[in-house]
Figure 1 (spheres, rainbow, N blue to C red):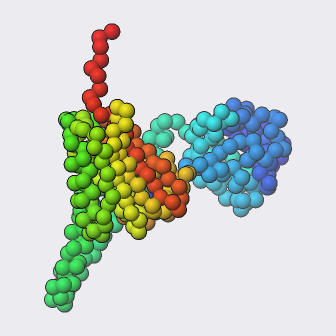
Figure 2 (cartoon, rainbow, N blue to C red):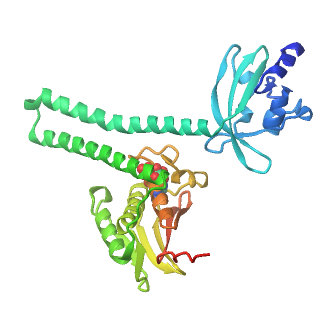
Figure 3 (spheres, rainbow, N blue to C red):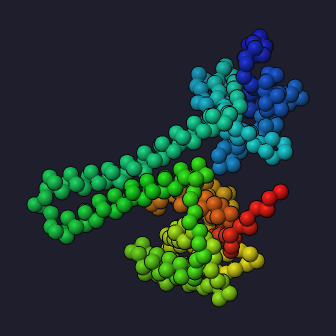
Length: 349
Ligand code: ADP
């Protein structure tokens, strides 16, 4: 690009930087200096050395912004990435680009709250559509096959197909139930019916119920409940839901390992741990799995990625928290901590 071309970019209302084939900065307008902090002293340096940009999973991406990475005439479609400031705080920015002669022109603009909400909404619609479409495709396929060739199948074959249809219908129902939980959590409208509950009874009942489901494979779970643990003031259904999710996950993701559930009173809290010796969860994914639709990288097993988000939401509604401790290859321990008793009524000021 000529010097005049570059000067014309001063008039553009967005932050613009121009990098060469090696990703070295040739130009940045005033808005780029304000948004990205690339002043005149940054010229000649590589963009990736002066600006930290990461994708949703925290991977640095600025190294890929070079003119040679994009064939002449091509454009980089706009995407929202995170700008990491020197103090470590992140800010979402939308970046797009086009190749101009030997250079790459990159345009950045701040991606505001509305954009993040829109993006979250379209991710939600895409994920939900996919999650509903795949079981429905299977329901449609099996019912159509049976209707067309009813007489050609044995009773056993028909039973197998109907079982699959039944499971797929359950899958859609489960997803819809989870989505309702998610919408209550997001709106801060989780209704707790707290009462004094015998936690040991629920812990043993959940372990028994989950282990004896077909997917639990009749596996024995190690359950220990501290004798000193008396009654706890929680919503029994919500507590059961949280624990069921953690135990089901342990059985699903650590299929060949022993699973242990431990509940005890600690200070003024109930501390429940669900431990397995399965594949574990790499550190960089441990936060993501508690997010909406957050699943482990490359995870293919059935699941919606909503279970831990709901578990966290229910624990927080009780004034508690959930977290995981895990090392890849060694297993995971999921912790739930809830207050033992009702919060003290507030004293008038
Ligand atoms: P889902 O099981 O429907 O995918 P969850 O929110 O319950 O959704 O779990 C999110 C992700 O966390 C899972 O997809 C899986 O990658 C990971 N995960 C959860 N529990 C374990 C575990 N015990 N061991 C290994 N990975 C786990």
